[in-house]
Length: 172
Image (cartoon, rainbow, N blue to C red):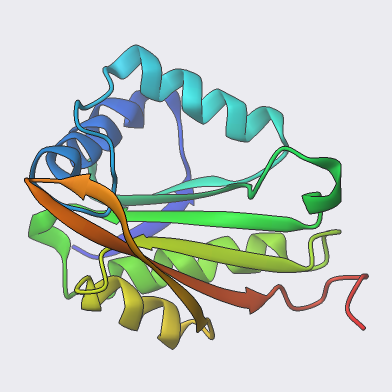
């Protein structure tokens, strides 16, 4: 059975919450310390959808294998043409192209919109899989914020990556 990518539905959110909770508890991709509950994850998804942005899931059968979404990079009006992406993959589904498929589908959904740039804020310089995923999707590293997060009794860097959103009417 293969992986399929589609718009998320409310019924997918327990699977999304489980993937994110594990990352919060065991990884540095998120600097949250306590996993948000299902109600909070539903609220966060609604914010993305109300902004007119995609929130996608990858499924294998009826099981959520990963998810991704775009959100506003910052809330100030001057950043209105810049988005940030988030991509998370279940541990059992890693190294199968799920993250890449999700990110490519997300970028395709945004093409032709009014957005010009997308950034990825990656927790941890050692998060090579995420850095490589974004490089494969055309992102380039534009900076590293040293020791800006503290998790698991250690200081953690943030890697900043960026790429243009193709087909944007604001391309110049």
